[in-house]
Every structure is written in structure tokens, then in C-alpha cells.
Image (tube, rainbow, N blue to C red; front, side, top):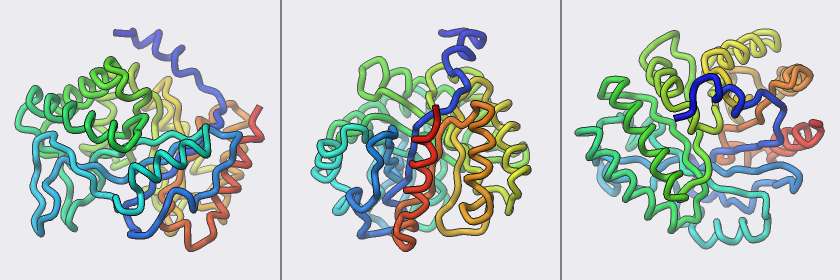
Length: 293
């Protein structure tokens, strides 16, 4: 394992041209080809979500690491993914695991045991990753029916195994600030032990109440300290009033972070909502990232 000191040097704080966008959680018609892609950024579509719950039932239940696709697979299909990656060589795909809800109920991380969950997750995700031409995974569990050590070991061992087999080339986590509640405790514990195999931190800054530019920068620096050495992405929600939106100074905050070499990229929740606005903020975000030196 890489030491914590070495980890800081591997995850160097610097501006990045990484743009990421969640897709598939809210729309039954959204297509990858609708989203504008700037050829000069590293572009990640993140499919929302793959969940280890039963599918096709009115009352989904946990499946102990056997993952199913809960995005609209008819419109975000293996064929469409292969096509978009062929047309745009800078595009990669990630699977986001977990999410907030499944079947209008909270989606809990609920393994029966560490070993059985990891074994099932490796098998089911490897099949899904190969079928959908996926490059990486994103960890977005937000509710927990187990202790943080079980979460840490399950997720850490999963990432290590999928990377070792070259099934994936990157992994990210997507925490938010719950005032030192269980979520941050789980993710900070994961980072402290396995941060050396986690490439990006998709921190959900839009989970905060409405922010000013100075507040956003303050919280960004706070989370950069919590996930020390990590590549932290700034974020906003397309259709909502929380956090710091594009019309309230988001891009000004990004420019300030860029001036200090801290902007690890930008991610947006989500393309399903952005389609109503003609993806104008996706275009601005990518243009801003391209302007980094």
C-alpha cells in the first residue's frame, strides 16, 4: 500500500481539464449524443445508477453485491456508449454505484458480509462493465445499514480488485457534507485507508444550502483538507437552488480556485435536467476548463 505521505504526491493539487456529468437517473429519453462534448477536455459520463438491489419489482430489496442497471438502458445502451466513444476519443464512461433512492425508497449499503459482498460485486460489475464499455466506477452510497469499517473494506477491496484485473482504470467517490454525520464518517474513513486507489472526489457542493462565492471557496478548501491530496471537483446542480449555481457565481468561484491551482475539474448533476436549458452550462464549464494552463 502506498503511504499517506506518498499519496499526497500522487494526487497533486493542480488545475485539471476533467469534466464529468451524471446521466440517466431522471429521464427516460436522454441520450449521450445530446450532450455537447469539447474535444479538448477529458470527458466522463457517469451512469446513474448501478445498485445492488432487485430490479423489476415494486419493492426492491438488497442483493448483497449483485448489481443491476437502474438507468434507462434503452436510451443509454451498450451500442450508444460504443458509438459515442468511437466518435469522441476523449470520452470515458463510469458507473455510479448506490445513489440516494431505489424505487422511491432509500438505497442502503447492506452487505451480508465483507467477503460475500466483494465477491458478488466483482462478478456482477465485471459483467456489466464489459457489456457497457465502462472505464471506471463512482461510489455514491448515501445510506448505510452497516458500520463504517465494513463499508471501507468492501469498497476498498472492490476498487483494488477491479483495478488489478484492469477492468477499470479509475475510481471516484461522491460524498457530501452531513455535518459530521454517518456519511462523511464513512467516506473519510474510506479515504484514510484506501485514498491511494481513489482518483477523483466528486464532492456534492450542491447539497449545501445556497452559497456565496466566498462560502463556496471556503467549503471547497475544507473538503480538500478532509480528502487531503485528492483531486477535488467543483460541482453544481442543473435544476435547483442549492449550493452555488452558474447564475450566482459558480464560474467566478472556479476561476478563483484556478488562480490557486486547486480546481480538480467540474462535474454537473445532471444531463437529464440540463437538456431543458440547452446544455449551456456544460458548454461554459468545458470552455473554462480548456482555458486552464
